[in-house]
Every structure is written in structure tokens, then in C-alpha cells.
Length: 429
Image (spheres, rainbow, N blue to C red):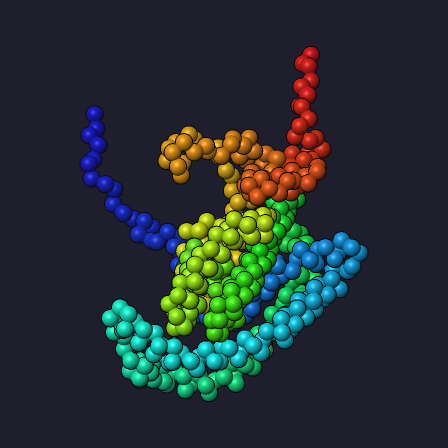
């Protein structure tokens, strides 16, 4: 009987060689690192181009409903796109002609009067509450020491900035035109690379996200215009100086900064009104709070009935994140980007019925959302449940003969039979 050896066998020279896949893996790792560095450097150099593309994308989404309406009335898509762009430019020119001069004049006066307003505010706080703030001369000296060089270089670069602005504006107009006019051809080029089933999914996601984001952007613009108009009228009535720039600041900030935008937008008008009189400042504050309630209860439900509602916490975090990474422009575009992401995820992500738990109720005894039989259906079982859930939440009923995902029942089932048709079982012999 032989006893097995406890020692492992000796390694041969062939065993000491590296595996055959190691050289290829090293080459692929080096190539991946090189491509990553090259992409990072290219993104840094192409920042302006990417900004133009992103801005043009959202403008094209906002224009799409009007262009689609003109196309349905027997106009060619290129002509419809041109008419919508020309109409938009004319509207902007008319608004600037009516209010641009007043806006610029009041804005210049406001900037020039900042030292006087600060001195009046400092004196009032010192007399009324005993709060001592740094004097105007001290503040101006600090600003000159900290920002003097930057302001000097900024003045020298004003000419270049103006030329750059017109270049970017022209590029945005051209890209927007091609995005809208050639939209069907662009989608067709993408769908040619996909199987028919994937084509329907891509087109469904594109349609839902485009409609929701366009409604979201347009509703924000309408609400910002309403807020600006009502605030301007009130500030003019109570005789607050620089009413137009203050109202425009309030309207834009209140709509494009979530959760706390109303209060941030109201800080500047209240401060200027406080320099006039404390009673006027209290009146402006009461108006801003009252208008916010009117907007939430009356204007927003009517204007935003079909638009995408964003989670306040997530939208606020999106503004902070995009502002930190991309600056002021990123903060302005954060909400449209978040709306796009939520529209796509809400269209394609599967949703389930909620269980009964007190942790899901905002108030004791609150009734959870009704059971939705479509919520437990997978994307391949007759459409995307997320799209139907979103449309039902905003009161958008599906078109006749079209499923919740925006496709016909025959397409949803993958055959010529509708989902409601019972499956026939042939009798066995």
C-alpha cells in the first residue's frame, strides 16, 4: 500500500509564466486610462460647445409643441420651426423694447444707490435695534482691496464678453433650428441601429420625456412671468424704487430655485423697501407670502396641470449640485435636467403597489394611493407602468386605442391580438 506524498509537486518553467490573458489586459488598461484622460481634457476644452448643446436641447423641447401643432396643420417642419423661432424672437424684442430701457435704467440706478441704501439701512438698524454694522467707507475699501483687480480685468474683457455672447447666441439659434427641424431624421437614424422592440421603447421614452419636460419648462416660464407682473404692480403701488428689476429677480428666482426660491427672491425687494420704511418692508413681505399661497392654490394647478412635478428635496439638491459643478448656468439648468431624468425613469422604471404601513402616511389615518393594477406590470407586459402612473397622477388620459405607454395595444402585446382578447386554448386530441 503506497502512502501519498504530503509535499506539493514542483513547479515547472511553464507554470512560472504569466497567464496568456495578462498582456492583453495590461494593454486594455493602458488604453482605457489614456482614453479617460483624453476625454477629460476634451470635455474641459469643449465646455462651451457642451453648454450650447444643453441650452439648445432644452429650448428645442420647449418649442416642440408649437412646431408639432403647425405641422399638424399642413406646414412643413422646417417652415414651422422657422416660424416658431421668428415669433419667439419677435416676442423677446417687443418685451425688451417695452421694458428693456426701463429695466436697464432702474438696474443702473439701483447699483449706483447701493451705498446710499446701505447707509440708510445701517443708520436705521443702529437707531432702532442698536445693531452696529460696518460703515459704507469701510465696506467699499474692503471691496476695493478684495475685488479691485478682478473688476479692472473684467472691464477690459467686456468687449470680448459681448462678442462671445453674440457668438454663443447665434450658435444656439442654429443648433436649436437643426434639432427641431431635423428631429424625425435624427430619431430615425438612432432607431435604425435598434431592433423593432427597442425602437418602440426608445420612441416611447423620447415622447414622454419630451412632453413632460416641455410642459415643465413652459409652466415655469409662465409662472415666472405672472410672478414678475404681480410683484411689479405691487411694488409700483407702494412706491418701492427700482420695481421692475426687483420684480424680475423675484419672479425668476422663485420659479427656478426650488423650495426656498420664493424667500430668496423676496429678500432683495424687502431689503430695498426697508430702506424706504419698515412699514413698507412689512407690506412687501406680506405680499410675497400671500402671493405664494395664491400661486400654489390657483395659478400652479392650472398652469402645471400636465407638467412634471419634481420632488422638492431632490430638485433642491440638484440645484446645489449643478451650481457647484457648472456655476450659475448649471443651477439654472438643474431643474430641466432633473425633470428629464425623472420623466425617463418614471416612464421605464417598474412601480409596485404600496403596502399598508403608518410609515408611508404623512398624517395619521391618511388613505394611501389607490391600488393600480397597471403598477405591477412589467415593461414588457403591455407597456411601461411608470408612464401610465405619471399620466394618471396629472390627469392626462390616454388617447383612444393607445396604451399607457403611448403605443397601441397590438404593439404592446407584441402580436396582432389586443391585451383584452382572451387566449384560446385548442382542445387536445
